[in-house]
Amino acid sequence: MNLKNTQLFESHAPVVLVTGAARRIGAAIALCLHQAGYRVVIHCHQSRAAADQLAAELNQKRPTSALVIQADLLQASEVDGVIEQVIDWSGSLHGLVNNASLFERTDLQNQTFIAMSRGLNTPTSRGLNTSTSRGLSAGSSNAQSPLAPTGKPREFVAGIAVTRFQKLLQVNVLAPWQLSLNARPWLEKTQGCIVNMTDIHAEKPLKQYAEYCQSKAALWMQTKALAREFAPLIRVNAVAPGAIAWPEGDNALSETMKTKLLAETPLKRHGEPRFIAEAVLSLFNNEFMTGQVLRVDGGRSII
Ligand SMILES: NC(=O)c1ccc[n+]([C@@H]2O[C@H](COP(=O)([O-])OP(=O)(O)OC[C@H]3O[C@@H](n4cnc5c(N)ncnc54)[C@H](OP(=O)(O)O)[C@@H]3O)[C@@H](O)[C@H]2O)c1
Image (tube, rainbow, N blue to C red; front, side):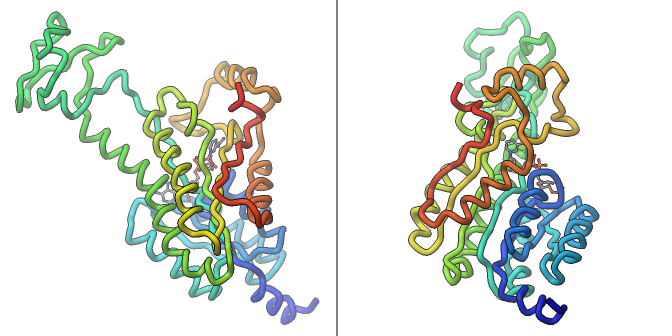
């Protein structure tokens, strides 16, 4: 096939947007869908270089088959521009994979609630913790924290905690919501499909990640709700991965934790990003599935 024909073929190929697709699971999804014949829009935020490199590799295989869009999903105004940019490039949209995600620890041991910092119904006001606290009074900014079980004073970080929770909800719930609503008219034209990336811990909470788990549970419900709202023209499904790509940075697990986690997995092994990509592709292909969540977790969710 000469270059002109290849470009003609590409301009008819279906188009999919994958958020957070520069690295890890998102990159595997983009690669897999590209291999299946899709033109791929690789969304990224901080991993621009990795996204450009992936797009270059895909465009080398088939010219004009990949595009990079950079947007911070924390900013609603930037989320709005994403579908517009996809349409400017391709004129159509057949699939959306809401894969980008924030994964942050919530340390409840050393935190307390905003109500407590305002002196409302506090343990001290109920006569608890009197030996460990000088007490909290309504509106008092100097009130000392009761001790956490660790013996350290609990921090009154309600403002920070609310901000972190809001960020998790923005990236993991509101951005997919906004993208899905913005994509709707385009997906209706192509009878397209949405796949959301949730987590097996949306059903069984992961200790120390209470806010993250709540956000993924909301995305699970969003999947089912939009499947009803968008039927019959658009199908909406989700994938719930188990242990696929080990968390990085502050969330990194010790070797002991990793071993324990794999021991608790019936298939006694770690997953790979391609297993998730294959699940996404199967949801794209199966025209009689909507409102479903595929658990891809080596059996972890059944124990
Ligand atoms: N890894 C696992 O084993 C596992 C297990 C259960 C569920 N999941 C789910 O599967 C999906 C992929 O997992 P993963 O581990 O590959 O994800 P990840 O590495 O934690 O995050 C994927 C991407 O999300 C993007 N992102 C984060 N904040 C953003 C923001 N403010 N604006 C725009 N993009 C933002 C980042 O893009 P940039 O790098 O470009 O900034 C990041 O590369 C996620 O939805 C995750 O919750 C994964």
